[in-house]
Length: 380
Image (cartoon, rainbow, N blue to C red; front, side, top):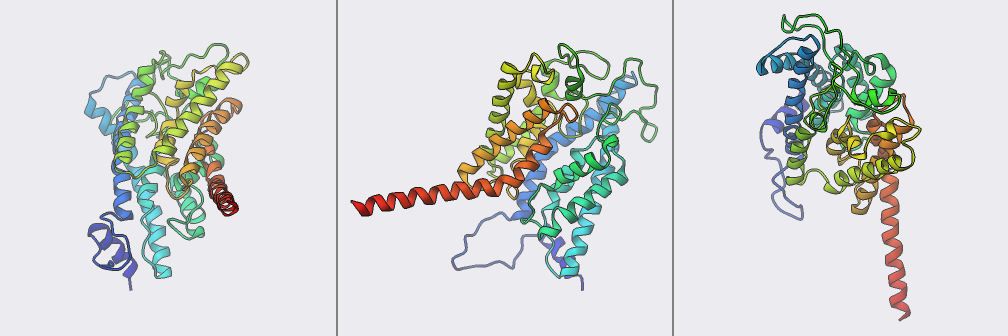
């Protein structure tokens, strides 16, 4: 009766023995579940640092000294419920649909589930997260046919749903730092100089020269930005932790270096354009191009979102074009739309739409060149 559920657990815990042993099939030692597992391992550094940073920002906001483990446990208790809600809701829907259809359970949500919990503010209510997860799984994945058939990145659809359906829970100065205590840990009053605005939020609303500060109003250095000790979504603040995950994805060949690198090239290119021609009238354009690359969700999106093999371009030339356009579009949205200073989410979702079109013209261009070569040879 519950064959789909049994099959899902069996193939996750053990190597399947119902595989082809001979013939023309190409055999490999890794399947999609193992690929998803490697991606989750790559996300661990950003997740662990995000937990520590949540505790760090909390104790900084209440002006209380705390040790490393107290900060980390505070962040763990804040993030763990979000991970559980995301997986329980998302996997629950997938189990139900697979059982209803009599099909095997798709494993794509193993990554999407943890990504959803990492791209939201720490103060996002659990019931809102559950609604967004259910929406993304049903309307951005299952209606298209399940894993491998979706047009849009599942985690980004959940974040977009949250942003447009519950904007007060995804923006402003109060949602990025958890200021209340958890199980008696971290109780205290906020310091007088507290401000919870993100770095990009400060740049978008600044007048005159842009000075990015922490939640106490103290200026942030480039080292602070790269390390990630600042307010933001749970998993996106630390460039170092994200690059550790990127290294694993590139070494294992799971993510495309062409997409990853071209996103940064596109962002740097557009940042330089705005630095040259638009910095006099726009405060976001004043940010140096390299600062754009290390703030907000740019690094996280380039490494873990843009490289999604299902929704990204698949031709080798198309990967360069796809990544470059994501980087360019993200910076354009940041600079020209002060109401949404992030930009990376909308840029990736927009390019998800155009990825098949990019692949089509790349393939068609190859066909046209070959046809011309054939005609030239026949004429000779």
